Length: 445
Image 1 (cartoon, rainbow, N blue to C red):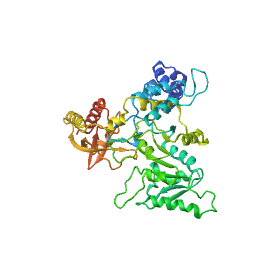
Image 2: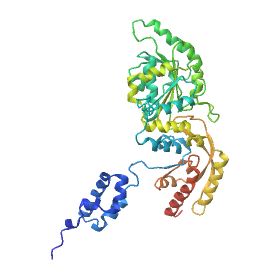
Image 3: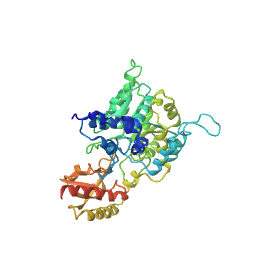
Image 4: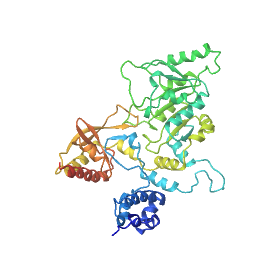
């Protein structure tokens, strides 16, 4: 007797997608995404590796829970601004603001008059209130963009004076001089790697008089960059912002970390307010670092200069969308963002939490509470320890914890996997416990 044609048993695509069990997934993920995965499942049915009646159950099992490949993780590294984990986590207030901004909004519209209005005026007003020493403020899409835009305006095609000790490389191999050079701006290096005095800048200004044949010989501005991800110690010297402001050129300062005002926990980190008070013409920083908001580049400075930057053609290419503006405003006016709470976490409270978690783990695995210093991360305060505690587990737990749901990311140090709870919201301690117990159960530890 002839065997039935297996292809006749393969369900039709339209019948599969019409199955009521898939209605929720299609609503959540979209019909094209479900259809693409269904095509792969049907191919297995066609090849005989899967029975036809298992088509929809198998498809449901393979469907992702969210319409994005990004996965939320528990940051147990102790690093507040972990670049590979997305830097600053947003506050609940910022998340609520994103929900408002997802639809039509008055981002650039005056509801009273029905006319066009200033873009993101609420966010800009909140930023200005946070740094009242600034004559005006502006927001672009990241910190590097803010610096580049400011250089374009302040240098205006002329050389930029920069200390050799501040020729830094930022994340992912991007180098400062290459970033500025890409805009056609030339850097005139000043001083040495470890020592750059005010006199070195003054001597560099003297080059202007010795190069009359060069139309762009006179420097356009002085750039001072905070070397936020390294420190040079020993026989060193550097000119401060107040000294540089006396040279007669506008001083552009990149403080990097997004610290708007001094913080006693970070005594060596420069901040926006102090730089402005010292005489900086423009100060730039990131919004997704110490500020604890979304990725953005922030500019503060003299009203006239910020106005010129706002009118530069490049600004349109670098401006932010309504989602960033909404999240930034909420981060500024709402409750303290998570980064601020994590930075100022009480070591005694962290110790109690670690003791509680370790006690819940000990029946299944050797868990020890040990002193552990957290870090700011994100290229900020590289030598500033954040005293705290961590739960020490066998080193092999690090890989296996990353495979849990949700993944738990710790750090391996001295042959141990350390789980630092500083950046883990306290309600999520139970998730840490569950993940570790799951690993212990799978390994028989």
